[in-house]
Image 1 (tube, rainbow, N blue to C red):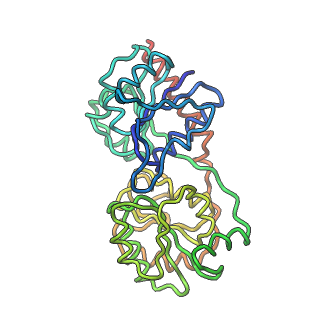
Image 2 (image 1 turned 90 degrees about the horizontal axis):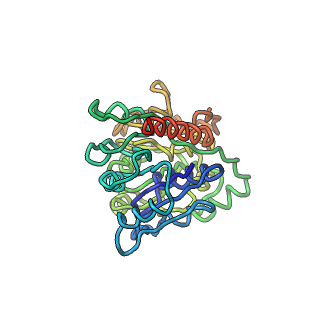
Image 3 (image 1 turned 120 degrees about the vertical axis):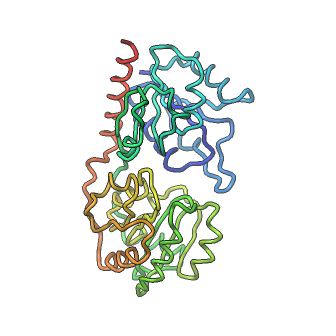
Length: 338
């Protein structure tokens, strides 16, 4: 099967990781190409999707003629069996362009459904159930829910853990709580800082990985015991220095950082918002209401008493999820060929 992934992006975050990891897994058995924009570097963080596109995945960058012109050339040269789009901009534009009748246009929803962006797609892959619930009955294409994935990582040795902490001036006895993501209002990092203050944990510090327009305001709130290391290229590895992880989002499409923290055997706290409920059951003691500072502070006090956790990660195995996506491709292709 020849699979063409299309994405227009200028950063490397959860969506971009999804694309590059899925393409790499598919490339073991199929011909895979990723079509990207002419410029792909985030001017704020310097993050970029291109270093993460691993051989044998083919990469095509749009030229001066623009994304759509380059895409049509790639369509003719690569001759895909499936076109898989990511994010609304590429899904909308490619939906307007001609393609062979038997080649389906499939989009993964990384946020909310939009009829303008996704209405011309033949099929949709939702990463969480809340997305599927919002798709209107007027959308005639196929749909499925296939969540994100991560692999469990080995715990760092005490020496490795201390080496990571030393760069921030911390010993092994400090209880280190972490969070991470793009620093925008909906991520709720201000709520986490307030909860951390209210919890008043002895010998504890908070570290917030990431960057974004809210960073300066958050740093002003944080004080000396909240660390802001900025964007990190290997966030899953950084989790090894933590004693606990918090996802304070007001709404979260899926919650990949939460999944990675669980794969790192950390106790977690997350808000019962969006895709988080596909990861943790509604009755989980790790869940708190979105925006509830007092409940989050109480959760932090409870987390202080916990050690490493053994989470059941079988539902989020990458090979399993990639197989489900391939099976969905086949189902949709058979439908378009009928």
